[in-house]
Image (tube, one colour):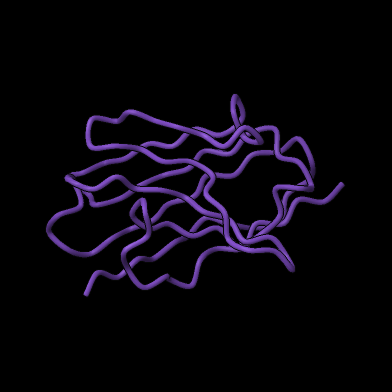
Length: 114
């Protein structure tokens, strides 16, 4: 059973930055496409960014040029650097494979004030 543990969220003013981390247990991390997802209040969870085994990346249009996804396979960890944050980025951020295959972790709350 893969466990996903996210961290790094918090409260930040618009225009600020946050760096999120997601540590995954299990032995096949390096082979997986990993993704960050966000669930805004009252909305469904949506994909924010994904990164493949060779670090190919793809982003939702809403975060392009502001967020950067990266991975460290030696640490079984995927990161999300979030810059120029906007109030609409507020939500619970979680990681999982893409498409999601594992039980969701608790996620980490990101709140951006205007």
